[in-house]
Length: 221
Image (cartoon, helix red, strand yellow):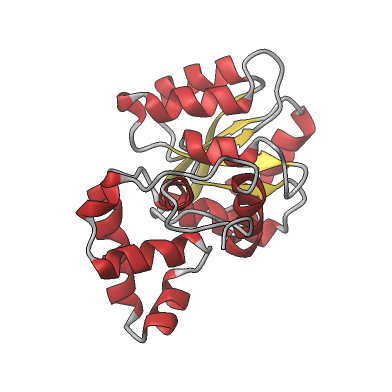
């Protein structure tokens, strides 16, 4: 059973998500929170599989709540999906850097929301890869040019290649097609890269790909 915590200051939004998710045989909404402090307390008490976290809430916002949950070793298995009104929300990149596993726009189709919860609970991340690719490129372009990271030395040439493709927003299937390998092989390379870099999930792998300079936004040749 996938246990979900809903964190949103709008009662109607929580009610709509609860009705949709509770109707699924493998998903159960175990709690609700109206602000970041409550989300943090509920996460520690309930240990949900997935938190759907609104990024803008009164008091402690979703961004800081995400950072605190992601840095709490007791909540290591908790995955966070950021909910935002706009695809290019200025805080989403910071949320991914802070430990979120991905994001969804609030007006997403019901079937996509259900798929997202299941995918993140299963260990996948970075929902809507094409949108995420645009978002990360947008905000990485405003940052200073990164210095090469020594952490890349731990990776094989193929693992660097795979991480760069993950950073571009490609799925395992798309990576497999690009490298002419099986999806299982692509997934193995991604998993080994995450382990070597101690990445919480695929989303952090993408952020690291940009921050280390392995993937370069449009402002670099």
